[in-house]
Image 1 (cartoon, helix red, strand yellow):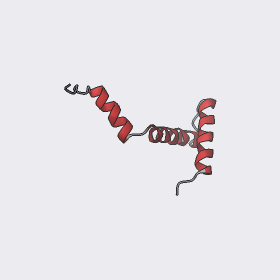
Image 2 (cartoon, rainbow, N blue to C red; image 1 turned 60 degrees about the vertical axis):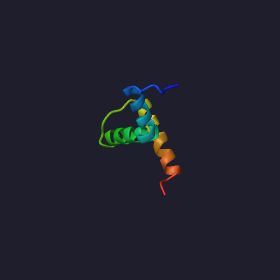
Image 3 (spheres, rainbow, N blue to C red; image 1 turned 90 degrees about the vertical axis):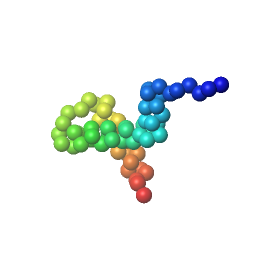
Image 4 (cartoon, rainbow, N blue to C red; image 1 turned 120 degrees about the vertical axis):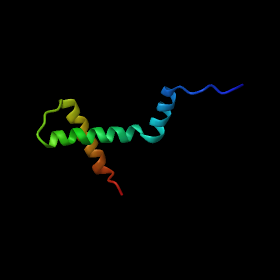
Length: 64
C-alpha cells in the first residue's frame, strides 16, 4: 500500500513536537510574563500564581 503524502499541517505538527517542545515554549512565555511583572506591569492573579509556582520549581531544581 503506498504511503499517503503528509499535509503541511501534519508536517508542522511533527516539526513542532521535534524542534520546539511545549516545555520550552511555556518556559519562554513565563519568562516574558515574569519580565512584565518585574518591570511593574499588571498581570491577572491567576498568571501571577502560575509564575510563582514556576519560579518555585526552578529554584527547587536548578539548572546544572
